Amino acid sequence: KQEVTQIPAALSVPEGENLVLNCSFTDSAIYNLQWFRQDPGKGLTSLLLIQSSQREQTSGRLNASLDKSSGRSTLYIAASQPGDSATYLCAANTGNQFYFGTGTSLTVIP
Amino acid sequence: EAGVAQSPRYKIIEKRQSVAFWCNPISGHATLYWYQQILGQGPKLLIQFQNNGVVDDSQLPKDRFSAERLKGVDSTLKIQPAKLEDSAVYLCASSLELGSNQPQHFGDGTRLSIL
Image (cartoon, chains in turn cyan, brown):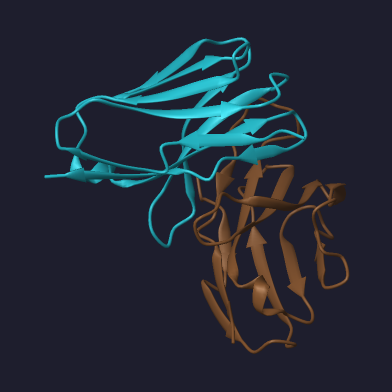
């Protein structure tokens, strides 16, 4: 069974700093990996989806990378802003099911 | 495009009562998912539909939980009877089709509290 781990569980950074969130998965046979953002009391908002054949995806200040062989993905956030404060979750898609990590709670301090 | 709609947003019931949640996915999305998210954890898949057929319900507690998607569009999830450990947020998500490289889109969820 696929297991997804996210480290750290919580992160606090000053505004303007660049940061990296980590996601690891135990089974490299994934279809794609998706990063989400979750604000308090809200559902999940899709940020980036990386297909298994891709190495990275970019959207604005966000860049996600995927290394299937090592079972790792990273989400890079450039020039962080207070509005980036949220919980970030990754999900590994095996083709039939998405397996989620427990998330990284990010606080960006003005 | 309109997003995934869920109702109600909040529900408070006593243990052993029953409750139902409703989800309307994005138009044209064949795959629909119900997740349970306990505070501090990632979402856990309960059941997955492709059109009106069940693809995976291996983690659905079938003695108390049931779900249907009769016409392959909107879906309901029911709990009967509820237990204290069912307190969670119930999220509905949809995607274009199973096995595609299309992202999942989530609703805002229903927050269930069991007294």
